[in-house]
Length: 296
Image 1 (tube, rainbow, N blue to C red):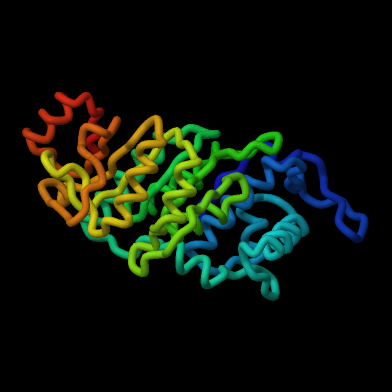
Image 2 (cartoon, helix red, strand yellow):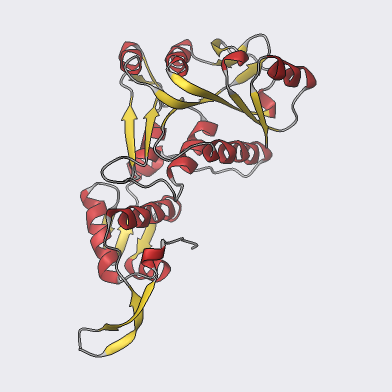
């Protein structure tokens, strides 16, 4: 395991007194403020999403904090329904972590999606209000964005606000104590987990975003960004219209493909992140429409 900790989690250099009254080797000073706890929880939940099970002793050793602090964290995580305690540790809550889809493939398409997600998450600034439609690339972007170590709540202000049009992305975000999660209402689509219908559109009309990340099934110069559902496209269009910055996310296999429903013209984007070769005609179109191209 490779977990990072803040400076306040480092050892204080003072000898620790064991219950028997004897001085032992220096141990970590227990973090006292909410920021430190939030950072610890983010690290633990990130690891738990992969391993599904953690012990008190291994977390204490990795974070260089006391086992009593870890036990207290585990107790509070269970109270917040983020994990379930077991003898000597915690396990992931099956429902939450099955919705928070973890990449399972290592093919070239998956690698390209992760490159796009990495660049997209780097565009997020602490304190922003960001939005996502559904899809594998947006899910990976959300996972990376909410796990950034500089996303910390301060004085009761969220470190990041995530507006979700998909249930699995909401699950990624709500597991982070420093992230405020806003979920649109509506009917959940069975395959994409996206929320659609009048409730979703009505909710989104009252919300405003700093940055909207748009996943797409197809990307065509004439058809623009497209997806397989008109209902999903309708919600995404409103989210785009209520955002200052609109970042399209695509892999090379999406270029030139048209799906059923139009999301938006390419010119509506402020940025487009693409993994793989970019055709000359698309590159020229992006320059003509002043869309910033990020090649990864």
